[in-house]
Length: 139
Image 1 (cartoon, rainbow, N blue to C red):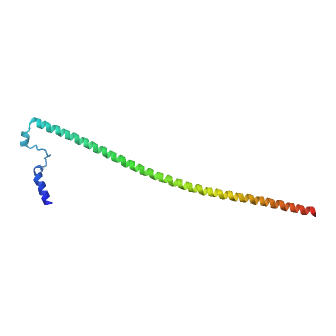
Image 2: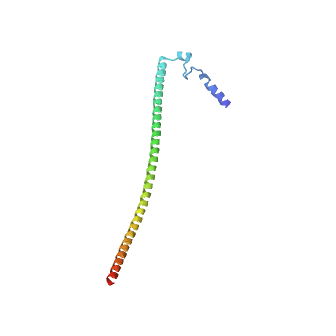
């Protein structure tokens, strides 16, 4: 690690000043530049600033898109829960309808049995009445 630090010190020692922006603009080198070089440097700086603004705009757009997708994922999750509840309620309703159908079948069966019993009682009553009538007429 120390060897790596020494190598980086060796390569970057000339760029360690606080006001150094990485451009070789010390007094000796600026004096040897032509007007065209300075203009070219300014154009490059403008281009780089514009590019940096565009990149930051793209980053903002990506962050907005990320928040939209998070919101969308949350909505999909909530709707999935709603669909699960609907499915559960449908299954419960289906089971209750089947139980109700069974109850109706039982009621129909009991009602049919009840009719038979009424018929038997009426016939028994008529038979007893006729028997009494027969006894009364013979005596």
